[in-house]
Amino acid sequence: MATRLFGSQTSLREANRANLLSSIHKFGAMTQVELAEVTSLSTATVSTLVHQLVDEGQLETKSTIRNGRRATLVRLAHNQGLGIGLWIAQRELKLAVVDFAKSIIAEHMLPLPLGHKADTTLERAIQLINETMTNIDADPGEIAGIGVALAAPVAIGNHMIAIPGVMPGWDGFDIVSPLSATFNTPVYVDNDANYAAYCESRMGAAIGKRDFVYISTNDNVGAGIVAGGEIMHGVTGLAGEIGHIQVDPLGAICSCGNRGCLNTIVAENRLVQLLSVTHGNMTMDDLVAQANNGDPGCRRIIADTAVRIGQVAADLCISIDPEVVVVGGKLAMAGEVFTQPFNEALQRLLFPDAVMPITVLSSPHPSDNCALGGALAAIGHAIRNSIAA
Figure 1 (cartoon, helix red, strand yellow):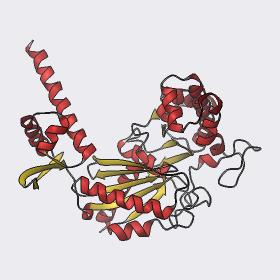
Figure 2 (cartoon, rainbow, N blue to C red; figure 1 turned 180 degrees about the vertical axis):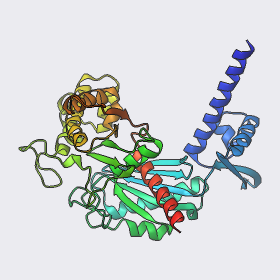
Figure 3 (cartoon, rainbow, N blue to C red; figure 1 turned 135 degrees about the vertical axis):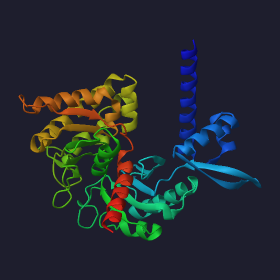
Figure 4 (tube, one colour; figure 1 turned 135 degrees about the horizontal axis):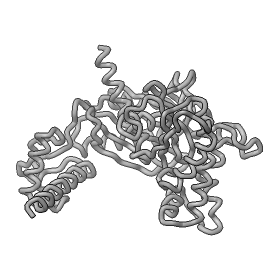
């Protein structure tokens, strides 16, 4: 009886800790009174938990003024500095703030119109960073670097869009200078699949793996290749652009100018169009949500798409021989509806008598690993620069 009671108290305490940390992560720095209101915990419980988490290095406190009275402000600990990650996709902007201990301090998302322009989107990104820093009670001087993940091929030489037309309105646009000038910090730009792979290697499914492939399944398909523990960019930065591998010589014209690329087969507009008669207007988010709710038509579309992506991924794996394949992105959020046919298509086309089969893993951060990877990469650069200095 005593053991059962102790176990219940321990579980309750852990649940309260998780509730408190989640609330600060979601809403930013708050006073202990505000935390009690948000979490529905007593002020005494909040005070006890805050003291414990401060001792553990997970929280920090400082004195502040609320409504003319002195109060204690509580925030997530900022270990050594902060990395900012931005993911600029076709329809959304995501931000992630990570500290040097790989703790996620804040995350935010803003919807973007299709065909959004570079200058206005970057202005919104700068505003979002400033608002987020205020919310978490952090000074811009704490920013160690900014990593920008683009849903497009990025040239390794100038950090701009490498293939004209893939992101209309962004061709030749200097992403680095406005951010660097505003926040007086280094800015790094890379393809989103590469930064997602970086995230998986540091705090995801591929921790400890030196040779693996990450497959991104968002509006466009891409791959991040990690070889010997480092992201493989190739000579120009176009390594891993499997979305531009031809799968149908007579297919539609791709944004890159070629015909029948994989992206033309698995693009959001084509997938939802296949269901327009029976399901009306949909987005890829709707497609995945309804598949997860058991809709047979949506499940069929995602399974067929997984097969096509798996077939191309198999060619990549035969070429570079990775240890594991990690899948993430919107389509992968359909779970086994995607991963099972993907894995079957992949294994069917690999060497039948291989010494070790390639394991397929699901990302624990399928929707935000691009932004997280950008933040982690910025921190990685800061660490390397400090060591070199």
